[in-house]
Image (cartoon, rainbow, N blue to C red; front, side):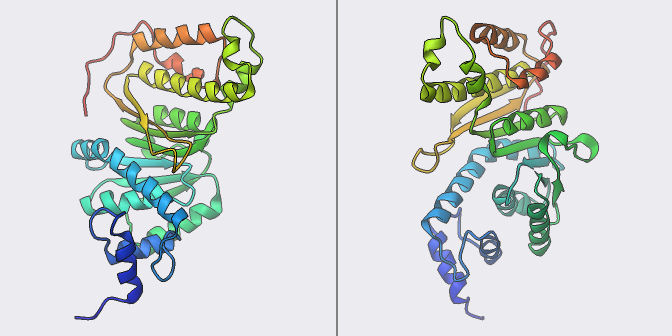
Length: 293
C-alpha cells in the first residue's frame, strides 16, 4: 500500500481540530485549490479563521438542509454573491456530495470568479454544482427554483436583493449573514423626531441603523410566512459581522408580522427599499395551513 505524501499527512494533522472527521485526500485537494491550505498542506491563522467560520455556518445550516433534502431530494441550494465559493464548495464536499442528491448553484456578478469556480467544480468532479454569472437582483434560475438560499456577507442592500431573490424563487429556507448595512443609517440621518437622540451621533446612527435594518428584514420574512431565528453566527473575535438570520417558510403569510412591520416603520419614519416586497404579503389574508419542514 503506497505511503501518503508528506503534504497530505501534514494537511490532515493541521485539519484534525477543525475539519469534521478525518479529512480525505479529495478534501485536502479542494482546500488547496481554494487557497485555504498551502501547497505543502499548512494552514495560516487567517485561513484557519476563515475555514472555521465556513464550517461553523455549515453546522448551523445542516439541520435545515437535512430536513429539506429528506423532503425533496432534488432540492436546489442557491449561494448568492458567492465570490470564491468557499461556502458552496465546502457544503458540497461535506453534505451534498456524500448524500448523492441535491444541487448547488452559485451566483456572482464577477465573470472571472464564475469561470474559476466552474473550472474547480469540474476538476473536483462536483457534477451537481454549477455557477451563473449575473447580479443577484437580475438573476432567475432555470425553472424559477431555489429551495434554499444562502448569502454570506452580502454587503448593504445586496442582502435585500438576496431576500427578493428568495421570495421570487419561493425558497423554503433562507440563511443570511448581512454586512455593512448603510441604507437605513442614511435615511435616519435626515429624520428628526422624538426618537432622533437614538441616532444623533454617527457611531450610534451606524449601529442603530444596522440593527433596525436586520429587524425590518426579519419582519419582512415573517410577513411572508417564514419562521425566523436570529442568532450569533460566530464570535466577535472572528468577525464583527456575526448575525445570522435563518428563516424557514411555514405558511403563505403572517398578518400579525405585517402589522408589526407597518407599526415599526411608522414609528421610525424610514422607508427602506426592501419594503417594496411586502405588497405580496397581504395583511388581510388568512394564514395558510403550516407546511412544515
